[in-house]
Image (cartoon, rainbow, N blue to C red; front, side, top):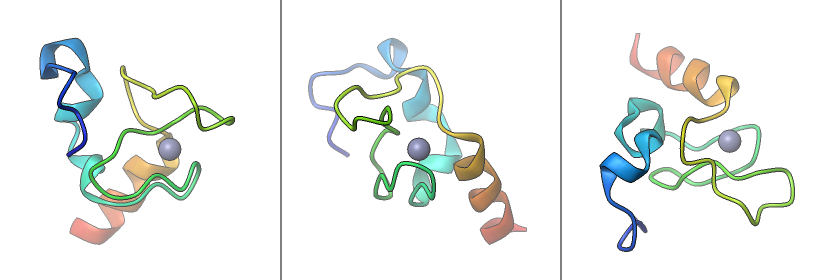
Amino acid sequence: MSAATSLPGDTPALALPALAVACPTCNSPAGALCTSHSGTRPRRADVHQARTRAHQEQTR
Ligand SMILES: [Zn+2]
């Protein structure tokens, strides 16, 4: 995890199980937050829907 400066309570997305897989939308690697289209702003509140689906498909 690369969240040394962020507490989980500050970044709800860190608690999402979908972080265990890479994001097909923004190409964020497993364990890293999703980013905006520019890749400079992390999405702290959630992850992309495609990432959630990818995780569900890998764990069903
Ligand atoms: Zn993403």
